[in-house]
Length: 129
Image (cartoon, rainbow, N blue to C red):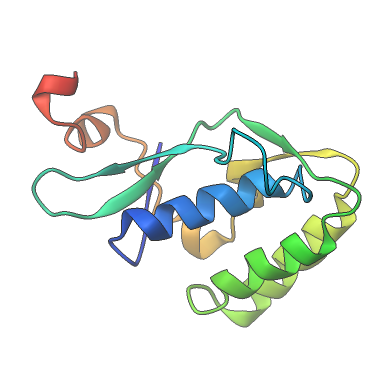
């Protein structure tokens, strides 16, 4: 699955991927691994999206409250306030357990997911297939 981002920037994609990864590792500043998932730039449109798996789960660290707040605050301009608030409550309640990343996304974002295999393939240059 690909989640197209509203800002066509690899740096923005890295920031989101890193923040999701840090939900399970709030003390992860100096670790080698820094990202939850990869990202891809559409070869024609230049759009940038996160490459997600529908089955991936992510642990939410019991001490991740500041990361959760930063993550949700970063999404507030992209989703309705009630969806952002619901996400924050859900993530806070999930501390110490695992969540399915796709299922945690607000509806506004899940409606953007690209799941059609042919459409996903169009995001990758033929040389990478």
